[in-house]
Image 1: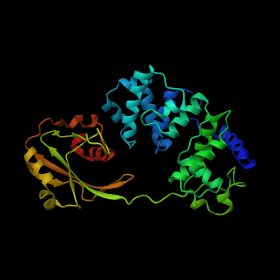
Image 2: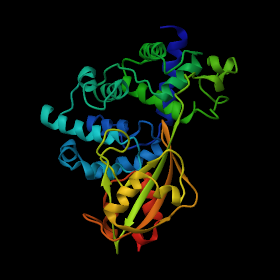
Image 3: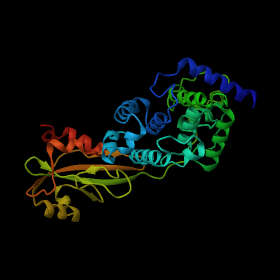
Length: 353
């Protein structure tokens, strides 16, 4: 190991031990709770994920309770965290741990990696933190720190970049305290070497950081351009009869699988009331619910942004004369729904009366 890499590991761990945040999954080696925290914090800030972690560990104190819970209960508690496949995989893996491993998490990186929803990052985190295995984690924070400190401009989302950064992280890891090292580099990236406005002038690596020396901090890490964001036009029809509405479950694979929503009509572009009534999907719903009148709820289009698509959304309130298998207004909050639907429910006064 070069002098520079040795300096990196030593100083990083020293900084972490003095500055780490007091979080409920720190200082423990319980693989259930470490796994839960790592899955929740994927693409999620600690401040947002922490309340969910506390709710989950209170509701499901061990993997047995999580495995035994209905999937809808898990999805409801997950509501608002997004990327719902994480919750479905979490539930499936809990069942695997109980049924295949008698409730005891496997102790090797390879076995952990075989679990549903567990990739290299999560397997490395659990293996290092819980079982002291020297397996380096690489996530967005790690990419950012390593690319800047060592001046690496290989795209982080290229096959060569993934390989290069993993090898460097593996070279850097402190084999005597791998879990501490992994938590330290993630913490440092989240709190110091941030995407915007990193604290370079007071950084412990400022005298060694290649990006700082070459004034390239804002240029690193390099990421290949994503595919163009697609725009979808969603029209949610909210049938109302007395104090009953209707929710349907999304069973097809894709976004929001197994979550509930109001009947959806997609259109090729944004539509007004007259345009809505010409859509075959609306005509079918009008017949099904015997709609006598429909009105636009939100005057401004709601744009709900996902990683790969933007949903331009309107809600339409439909006076229905028939709602079979409907849901009482007082019960709509019990169903797991996407945030887009949750926000509508919260603002629609009849549901909260």
